[in-house]
Length: 320
Image (cartoon, rainbow, N blue to C red; front, side, top):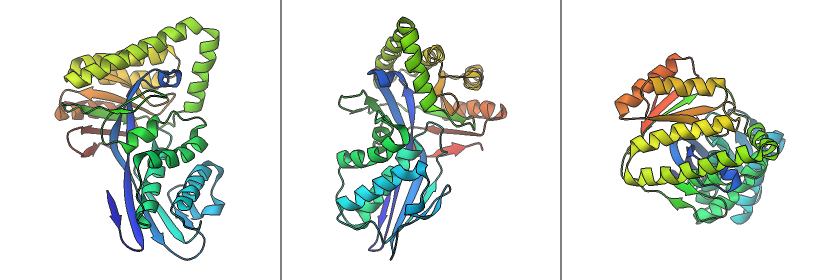
């Protein structure tokens, strides 16, 4: 969504889910990511003076932003340079429904909406490639060496096939998926999880390589299942993927328990999504009604938030 006047621009971006392949994607294996209809909205207004920023985590002049937000500042500065505007004379407001630190791509979604708003405000064209490169400025500050999967998935309106160094391929699937997402309420620790896998790879190379290879195979099979509309195979692959993530040490007791709750509620498949060690799980239902049943069981377990949706409609249901 984009709304533009001569003095104001409003743009949105959605969040993302990793369907299969997290962590293995760092080692060159394929991953599949998909849009998740939790959204962020950015409103940018022309003003006079230093750039003022308003959000749930920081409000004030942009030059006084916290260290954690320096990537956003750098992204804004470069975007303004690209549209030949000074680093001044704006008011930027962020309204986000995406919880921070849960592996849902909140930082990329915010940066996407900001860049779109800046280019819209000054009536400049913006290609997906240029948008991607600008957002990666913020993502590099946030994540060190990001694979780019968050940005790619949140720019796309379709699920994507992602493999580092290769062309990103949209996957237009012919069947609806009924997805449930449960938020533990705990921040995931992607840096620690990635570092743990790296250390394990050094100390237990064969074990880790076997898991990475298996996740790569799961990715290939999941792609086929999506294109063929085989939700039962896809569900089985989600469970298999979670077992490999457990071997890699990026799951934890609460995430494993939530996967089992989803299984007991009849989910076709379930797994952690994102970096792990906190964050969220996703589960696959047979219908929207079944997704609600799974969501209710997960909510009753004491999680922070549960959402469910169908990929054939842009409506997100919440049990918070």
